[in-house]
Amino acid sequence: MKQIAANYSVAWIHQIAEIPKAAWEPLAQPLTTPFFEWDWLHDLESSGSATSKAGWTPCHLTVWRDRSLVAAAPLYLKSHSYGEFVFDHQFADLAYRLGIEYYPKLLGMSPFTPAEGYRFLMAPNEDEEALIELMLAEIDRFCDRNNISGCHFLYVDPTWIHRLQRHGCTPWLHHSYIWSNHNFRSFDDYLKFFNANQRRNIKRERKAMSKAGLQLKALAGDEIPHALFPLMYRFYENTCDKFGWWGSKYLTKRFFEQLYHNYRHRVLFIAAYGEDDDDRHPVGMSFCLTKGDRLYGRYWGSRGDIDCLHFNVCYYSPIEWAIDRGISQFDPGAGGRHKKRRGFPATPNTSLHRFYNQRLSKILVPYLQEVNEIEQQEIEAVNADLPFAQQSG
Picture 1 (cartoon, rainbow, N blue to C red):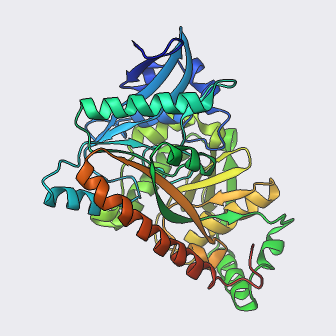
Picture 2: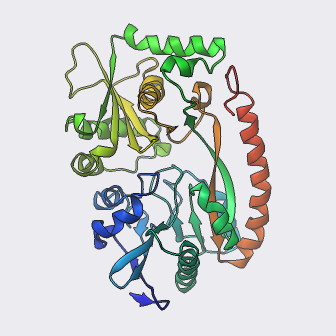
Picture 3: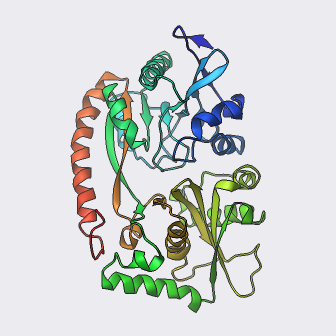
């Protein structure tokens, strides 16, 4: 550890297993997102999914008072830009043409997880503004000492954006597709939000399950048979393989298997069963996580191509489950071609960037300001064309 203030010392940690779970969890549990809890990050690292070999070198910044952890920043040194879903390859290309080493870069996010909520983790009753300033100064020193081109915080908690802008971080606007619960009492209530044509389309897609002889079951936590976790890996693997190089297959089988033992309390599977299938052998399945009033879709797969199965296990059944439990928001994951027609408006999300090379900074900071204006126009254009009977505010 290095003393950096009268009350604080810092340590850079190269695997989360070095930090006691009992010290980390009081900082992570208050967050709305589940993706910075100790078990989730530990599974990513210990399963071989987020490791130096995969291009994700854990490099977590921690702040301590005596022996108590009071703040932490989940961070990774990246040797590429894959698995982020914020596409900065044009930044790397510009750096190459300028003769600047873009990699490694320092990255703040939950690996392979394009879900909003990144921020520094803080213990209650700490001076958050002072800790942010202290941690950013330490990140700056680390990057300068190690000749790192930039530090990038992705899918930032919206309440945190303006604070970091005041400390010199440059915002980059993107969008996701997020479902919001407008006090729906039932799935039929949700359907009333759509125009008549799209209501008929959704009803037709829902009926396709019974026509195919399939029954959908929502299984959460201890309801999930152990065998479904390795099966989910096979479904995930098959789905990724269909897209070849662009398949985004980053997680290992061990990651899915470990979830059963230490994280199934956050897991929701939507499983599709034929008449002859037992509980351990669905024909298809989606994998979601839930925490508080939030639901997050992650992956899905099936044994074969079944008409409308994707829409049902990834969108309609999770929405029905969310309505029944008073979930306020459902983030179904990356991509949007299918989502915007099924009740998921374009919703802004923001990444924040610190460029340490002056030439990169002079070019990219004004460039991002222009990009943000264009992105805002794109969000408005998408939402002006949604198939709603009335706009969702």
